[in-house]
Length: 203
Image (cartoon, rainbow, N blue to C red; front, side):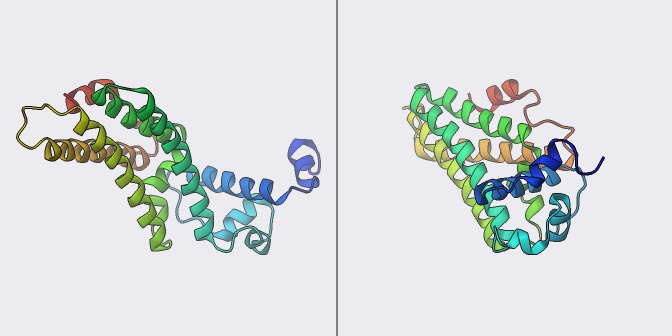
């Protein structure tokens, strides 16, 4: 019945500003997880939350700021993990494999975030959002390049170029797997045969 249960109790309890912001972002991410969902409007988001659009804008100045909140979550989550890998894994090639693995595992666990990462959810949104995701993958590629340069064969004529080529290929592989996941309606998981694929790419 309306007005009863945990959801109603939560609605009756006045949320703190930080809690409401988090609730808005969680709801946006959940809406992005619906395969084939079209562009999400603030009206649809507000309706899902049983709020007015004006209430949304008390917490975020624009929808672009909401997406920036999701991107900040992606950046913090992934780079916390990759930094730990860089600090703890001494073997450069294994380090590169693990960086790619945690990126794809994050995407698999967070389908809505995957649509943000590959840009599907950012079509028709502010250009700076896509630029920020481009910078995210540039940073992933840089972490891979640095590690692969450390582990390059010393007999190579141009070890830095070799590391760049390998890092670029690994990043493109990761982006491709995430795109396939999003565009298959989340049916083709990005970690499919991952260990075997990485062994072919990082030799």
